[in-house]
Image (cartoon, rainbow, N blue to C red):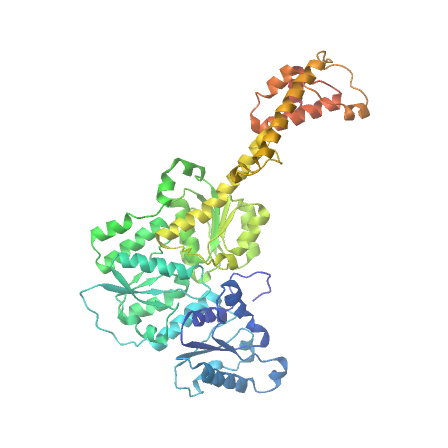
Length: 542
């Protein structure tokens, strides 16, 4: 472990908290010092949950280390059972408490409680948050789901389990709703969704399903492997992110559920708006945009596929902090001709971003901060995320509706960049002066008309001044002294101004400024055609 301002993953006990918080009738007794209660804020402040996580901390202090901290843990566990009456209790230690080696697992087994007590050996100094969540989920399933095989009917509607969604997951709540709806259209019932909103009794029913759907491999993979081995349940491994990923997901589900071709065709006919836009003329603006992608393995790999196959981006960097899934990330990167960035050091990722110079970043909240400093558009696609990445509105990442959300989230930053670029190009036109009222707001029309009138009057004054200066000084004349040149008022002849208007509007302002600076340095007024050409040659020669 090392001290860092930012971290992609917390210690593994935070992953265990995510599973316990997601479930019902489960309580987690965590042997931890007083300072380790900070993790509660992740759920109440970041995810904006209405209640605190179901966690009891022993909160021992420095003065307790001279006494019996093991007895302190046993007393906290017994008090938690009496107060909350859970159906299952998890016991474990935080990374700090591991150092005093009180063995919460053995102490929990010796409590003699009338409920299952599931010990967690979280290896805090070798593992991290997502691994901790996956291990906790696996241990709970092993404790609650009987290993004996079950008879399943060969007729009727098929059912599946949705595995992987947790508390504090990136859009997990909305993904579950979207995939449940999609499965219903395919004639498949959801038997159990776990850990999110599942109880220990629900975990016991996992074996009743015909197959499993692994939504987030970082958390679901150990449990899915055990269910396949113990109960013969195959797993749908396709990640339904993006249109292509969702179509592959539908294909795999339809094969396992024996869904008719007509039903599948009907579901595929409503593929959202992203494919239409990808075929439109406007999408040519996106083609070849350089994109840097970093996040957890599930979202990073899916984002790379969507970026290249569905939006025509060029992925210039792909990486993940998920070391347990590093092989999959490297495989995806190799297919794109890249070397994967596998790192949990945000400074190393920042160096890669600066070196690759992408035009769009798809990453975590850390990449968003770096992209803002670099002036590059960014969209968050993965945890860790901040509070505004847990919106109150329905905003899935999976399914066809999720593809629409991805399109809006990824493309709009680029479009805003284009809009700012165009405003910069038009800024020299009288309708785009700094004081002009925004035309799309529809207010202050009189003020805008007054500014237009002022601009027209200014042009007229320019023409009148040309008449007053009908005898221009030759360009070869000796320039006056520096003070006189600095105070000289620059006028333009009619021919020079007419030539200036032939210059494209988006560089016309720069041409005017350069020419007038050239004329002031040499004391030339008014600006003639000859002065304009000399100034052009002067600045082109630099």
